[in-house]
Image (cartoon, rainbow, N blue to C red; front, side, top):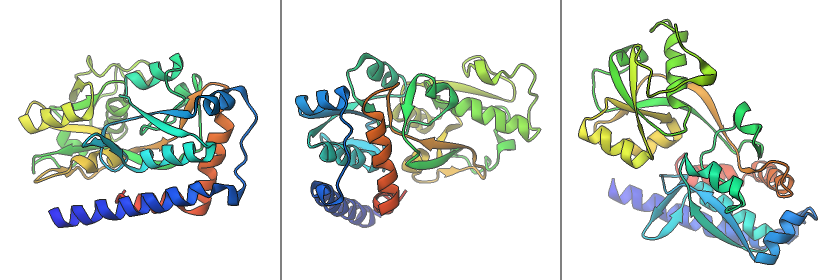
Length: 280
């Protein structure tokens, strides 16, 4: 397993170099850069500041002081096409919105699901990846949603996973939906059928599962796969599609450029190649 993992990392590194090489010659595909104040400010600064996570294997994680993953590579490609360097800022599900609103970062590429509520506050690119919500457990007796009755599940602050899980159980008639308010759901107070513990980030949630403090952890399958080790397994259920987009400030002069970039990467196969290299 160690050799296999090593080979995958090497392959991902080689592909990243190849993609960077392609993006460095992006002038050959005539990258269109809108003439906006926001983009001019970034180019004058010489740095694109991007919010990424540090504990999501395959997407963005920090190892030995360096960031790596699909989202890290996308950030680098954005910066290359703007003709600037990239600066990574570690964000969490709690801090990413605050940092973007305050102007401390220019965009967020951090497994950030596009929702109706979030689109009221931020601009989002077309989705670059689609995942689903599930639950990771370390108990052979937990295999389906119905097995979660009476269990405690770990989730991360400001994520929709707890709400999506409860809704899925209600929809399947596994628990009573009385009192469920999708617009004002609070995982810390929900106790019907399943209860929740909320953690700051995935590493703490992972540690709680290892310690036996929770019976499972729930988030997107793309994230959970990075924590599937040993006897752990995903339950036999996926629900609530999660479309990841690159977020920028509402009405930002950077938004159109970012959206066009993602469309181009989907068209030319860059994103598919990264998915394959990071085993996503």
